[in-house]
Image (tube, rainbow, N blue to C red; front, top):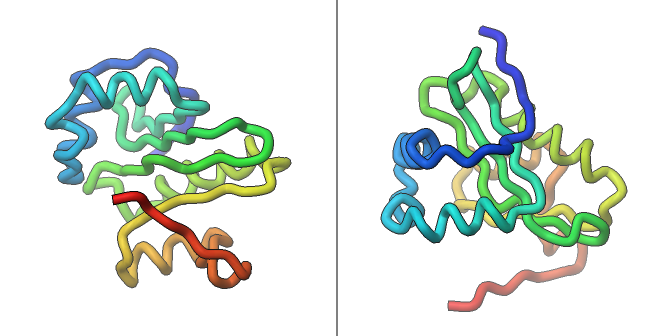
Length: 135
């Protein structure tokens, strides 16, 4: 399996909705117009492709100079645990290597913690910081 990572430049709603549906992210697929707008306003979107098939995506938002937020990272279930997500995150880190803060918010599970920690992320408390989320 050879996976290529490249900019996702042309929003194709059906493939995006299929990808988000494959991982159960219905909060996005229930409102495709909002998801489309989010893509349009993103700082960077990279796709992971198996030949011409989109199998993963990462989306970053922010100013690109002082802070970015990895908003979405998702990989089709059949491609998970095969390095696709790692490559996507590493490419974002590489492209924004001069940015002081690269943040993300994710589910609090052993697997997600282990994944992001293996890529050099740490909890905000490790940096004498805390995070807040408006309800």
